Image: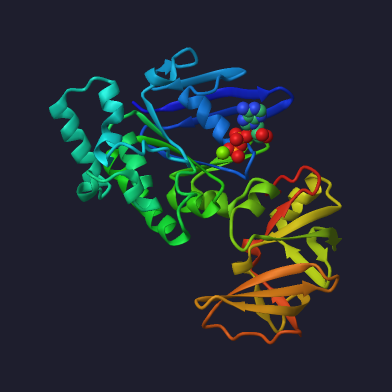
Length: 363
Ligand SMILES: Nc1ncnc2c1ncn2[C@@H]1O[C@H](COP(=O)(O)OP(=O)(O)O)[C@@H](O)[C@H]1O
Ligand SMILES: [Mg+2]
């Protein structure tokens, strides 16, 4: 079984703590995406699972066994890197079967496994070519096929699509998800691209500075980010965040005073603000949840309107000059640039965060 359990795993390089007490369990056959900005410790975490780096502290289990003392080659995992390093002098077939030869798998079985993997990845007709005769996307598929022939319990993929151009990346993204459904193997997939994470993962685990921020299904993470880092990292254009004063009017009615207006807060959230004794709070609203309306509670000015064809990004400024982005569908009426506007939204879509701890304020 391809379950992976990481318990209290830390990796230090001198004074740098690359991974800090990471605890994470990946279920058998799950597609888990490890997401975070460059330098947050994603590759280090993956390399420790692969057995290429040794944890400073903590326990790693694959299947039912602790693998801390098991060598990389005996862990039954296959890793695909961003730089997929094919052997240039070998044909595609030889490249794919390389791990089988080094395991002394016999000729007939080798041939069958190679043809199966090549078929899955659409490489059937390219088996006699050399890597130099392939496109970047085809080369990446050869690297994947070379990992698949081993039938590992766990695939570890480190930014495998980042060398592909944008169009090919989108296509290969879908192909990888399809492939995962067919091979039913556990996948741990590293990326800094939140779109890849949202579209590919059964669950996303978000890392920042070596620390795990949140783990959950993509939609949950999107709808209920646990802190400001996650709120700003997931979603494009990013969530608008504005700091305001907590206003208490006639007993238990609460609002957040932001430049140019006040945002009403639901009573149960108001209670949470009191419980935390917050004088200020960060209000977060996603661009698609903001609307331009004649009678919204917040005064603003439209600065620039960007049209993307199917949708529009309307850049506004609050009365103090802070930028705020509104996302509109193309069918909505476009506002004129350099005109006053009022912003409105449904309070179900308001996120509030403690400005000091940056944690989400929960009812
Ligand atoms: N072999 C190493 N020696 C020293 N520092 C390293 C080494 N590998 C990674 N680091 C540091 O650990 C941190 C995390 O790196 P890495 O895991 O490669 O991040 P990511 O893959 O998320 O971009 C970075 O600060 C990086 O500089
Ligand atoms: Mg990396």
